[in-house]
Amino acid sequence: MNSSINFLFKQIDEELNRSNPFENINNFENHQVDEEHLSKTIELYTKKSPIAVKSRIENEYFKFGPLEELIDNENISEILINGPKSIFYEENGIIKQHQDYFFSDRTYLNFIDRFCSNNRTTLDLHRPSAKGKWRNYRFHIIAPPLCEQYHCMSLRKHQNKYIDLNYLIETGWTTMVGYECLKHIVDSKANALIIGPTGTGKTTVLNSLLNLLPNNERIICIEDTNEIKLPNQVSLKLLTRENAIDQKMISFDQSELLKESLRLRPDRIVVGEIRGKEAKDFLLALSTGHKGALCTLHAKTAKEALWRLEILTQMGASEWNLNTIRGIINTGIDYIIELNEDHKRRSLKSIKKLTSNDGPSFLLEEVWPNKLSF
Image (cartoon, rainbow, N blue to C red; front, top):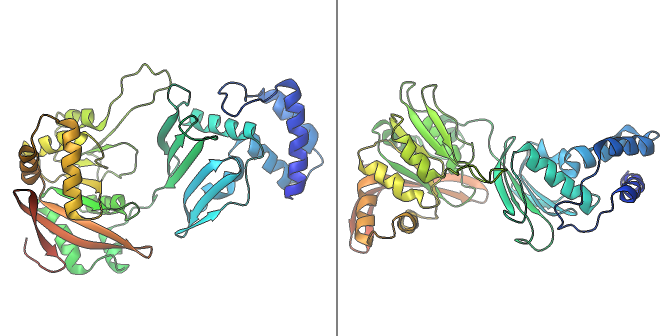
């Protein structure tokens, strides 16, 4: 079928080029065509074609082309696009190359345009990148000149179903004793970091912990992309805003939203991921007496997480000295929940309690799996 589709596409593309020549993949203006003319041209050239051939041609021009068969596949967790003929996907933990592709540079750019339009974002020379949420995927797009030739894109799927801790116990993620430790952290309203490398399930665990909360606790949740499920109706979510289409609207980053959250009567503050200067505002909120806070942070070990938290705090408070930063971290953070992934199997690696900061380092006490004292 590929040969017949390619033959038809070349005929259609030649017809379109006669009315609107395509010159340069990096030109942001000259790749669009008149939709009415396009529909008539497709109908003319595909009226005798099988339904599957016509559908694939229409997908190329009006939908998501070669991605159509990937985006709804439950076994696919990530889609990586390096160019019109370079598409990869992760299925059951293994990266594979897609056998289908976009037929031309023009249709690839048209796909990027449709995608950005659906997500109320834009790409141009002023701001050649965009990120956000699309369906149940988190997307990121980079355009030339930030990448070599073609627009590059990643689509990372996040879970539609929310897993509770009981399910994690059944699947061997942790033991019953580990579950009791996590439940103690939540019930005692301790402040905790959930840490681990990429792909260890930090957001999944955060959602699982929120499922333990009662219906009358108000959570103010702050995120870049909408991935966390609120545990009850009294809770509230705040989302960052950037990359507005007209480039005139005020941006709200996580630092600003943390300040706003303090005026919204939170019982707990939850941050989807700390990755920048918002670390300072998060720690300042905890230092005022807010309890039960939860957030995720990329790091391989608990010590690396604390070092990274120091660096991120300095980004927002360059005038603070190191002793001040370590003191506010020690005051604000109670536990570090460390996650791991080994041979594509996720697990709870350890739970550590931050006891004090002593000179150039922090003192951490392991409470699970080797000790059981809180």
